[in-house]
Image (cartoon, rainbow, N blue to C red; front, side, top):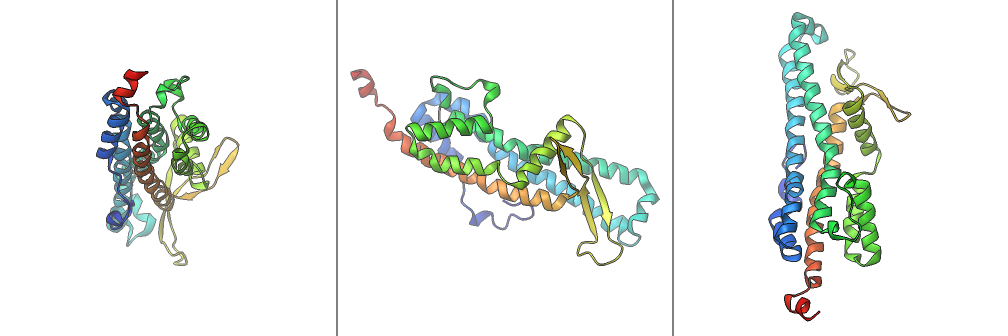
Length: 260
């Protein structure tokens, strides 16, 4: 589901997370599913949180423009500046929540893959604080190259989540807002009539890790990056089920265990 429309929902592949539960339980046991379940559930919650916060921010902004600024332009904010200030506070809160939820998808996905594939049962399991996108992807690739070629597509899909200029901006924006300062949105009006959009909500420019991130159209960034990551998370869920199906024949039978 895209943040602007759910029209394409029925056309896109669907991840059956009930099947994920059945497969994890069948291959690794109920105790393993108990560890995997919270992150599997969260992988469906996160996109809904993003959609909610995106719509809240956009709808509040559009309603305010329609009711207060359409006739007067930005001068209209001074008729009740307290109302405008409170509006911008709510918009900031929703944008920050959107950004942090979208950024969290990669690490939530890391936990889902780590426990759903029982990677915690390996001889050298990761410490809990190290279960993140970078380390889990590295571990998946190592397992793929050693004895699980069926992990290949899963590795490629997971890698895509955290690559590209959009993700670089998302990562910088999240960490700046989380640890240093809120990157504030600013409402900009084109009074000349030359710009296609009269009103644009810009995220102010900021520095992160020595790089300057220029002023960015908040609506455009949020839509594009969400609509890039969301289908990937579904594809990862679908592929996880395919991998688990392939692992089923590898599960030792009770008789085989007894014969050892």
